[in-house]
Image (cartoon, rainbow, N blue to C red; front, side, top):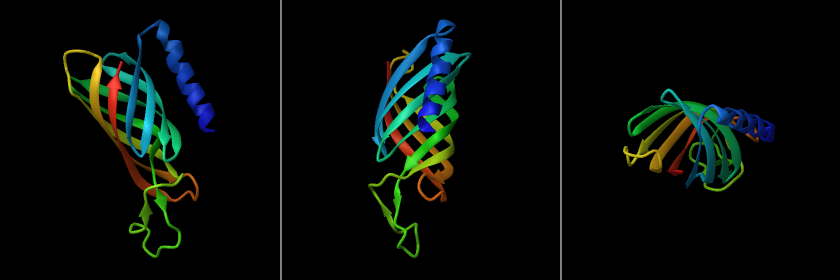
Length: 151
């Protein structure tokens, strides 16, 4: 299912390339170590799709409203990834750093761009949201942090 959503999102953005410029970015962070993204901007709104690869993998699509050095948005897809040990009495105490349980859901994003003079450059991005983890359909809040370079 993830591959179909990724193909659809990237196809829609690529078809929009004839009307608008297509931009690329590459990010690294936790729990997703490599996050390539493709985006297009129209009227100070950036529409994007990305593939997140790290402790687990996932796809997300979203829109961000650009205001100078700041971008705030909403997205659907991979929010975070973490392990919850099923043998624990209190699951919030038993979080481990490595496993393959992605939280897929709806989230909010915030990005701070370190340079407001050019479209290219470095940024710091935070994403948080609510959804179901991929293995047991347990509902939870999750998030991630990324250092991004926009090409």
